[in-house]
Image: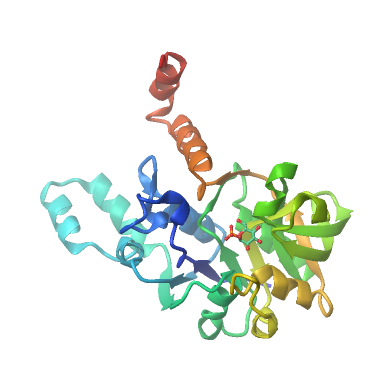
Length: 288
Ligand code: G1P
């Protein structure tokens, strides 16, 4: 089960980050010096993905431009003999192939993924959500999931235990553990209340899906908010196929949330070889 294609649903309006996201995509907010979306693209590419399909919306042109050549900038850097920066920005557009398709209305994650059906074609594929930034020391998370999907020949979801007061922000699985870190999913529910949540194992924004999912998305009714949820489609698919949850290795930040974004920024700066030592020094001396 070799995973070559990845779908990035990036049509969301970023309302949690207004006013910063009024005219700029939330995916372009920088963690230190790189936009959020670049971290996620790099994770996919390091995991062997060669084609990324972005499901975009209006106001998202900056994403497309970021992964294209920037001829004027390249000429300027060339004229200054700044080969370090030249190489850095050229690499961004050479990382892999990108295609773009629009989700014209915000109708949920399932609906967004279904837009990519023709581009994905009939093969297993990855889905990566840009709000979840995951720092891993060894293998990137989508690569970890790909390995499990290959072994189990099934759909695999990244899962993580979350505090009780957070279960209502995630898809939550009911499962039985089959191996260390690996659980077989029995059912799942999108954003349940604490008393209705079957566990605290939350679905995080990394998935390896098989192409059958598209038929289940087609059969999924919109929820009370008019959104077609991927979780509901996956839940339906459980009647016919096995699905696994994998407790990945890595530290995840909810960069779609202000506090999560700040934590990601601080820790990313601390890990940065150039900034880290002086930033740590600065933090230890902060007085407000
Ligand atoms: C989506 C999914 C949810 C999942 C979450 C992970 O929700 O619908 O099941 O737990 O991503 O980040 P969203 O955060 O887009 O509302």
